[in-house]
Image (cartoon, rainbow, N blue to C red):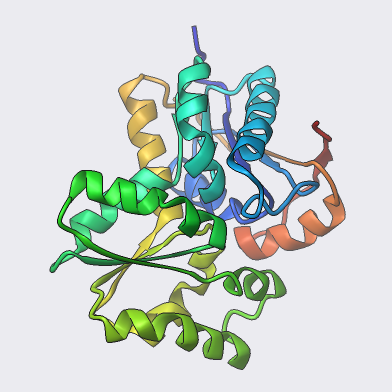
Length: 268
């Protein structure tokens, strides 16, 4: 039987999934977390679906061995390629980032014209289009990669002139085509939300996959009576497969607060 006091496992190809971890901490403050960033093998986007599934299996087995009660795949590429596999194989709930964002986009759109931005791998997978059309078959979906947003975020250039130029280049086609809802289909992108909102204007709803995934985790855990009833301060453990010092430096930017340390565990 799964223990409701056990931690939630969260994993990503690197550090972007920390935006999901931050939302989980905000929306579920009583929950303990174990976050695994596969920094030795990032990025996942250019890799084959089979390779991404293998990496995701290795991480899920590692986190399950550490006693987690649920898995959150805080990576769009891993969700696109590995979510059905892990949901079929794991005895605990497994939650991805794509379907929660798709549901929120369908709920938010006024005219059915929905944009999606993500890494090249996520856009190439078509995962958001499938998830959105499963809910609203007649939706008009415009999906475009926005890969340069990732290094801009990691550099901390959230309101830099270069970031503004890149945002205008990526986002003007959505504005020109009358998109009324835009899915931020990469976990780095929420840090650019103020800039994206400024470029697109107030009439475009922005769907933050981190917020929606944390809300979905709350719903799933509640439905299975797995929400923690603990009082007091929750605990977070961070594990990287490589370069823990860089992870430590970047974590403050993504979490909005410093962390005490990072464990290292290599897989594969």
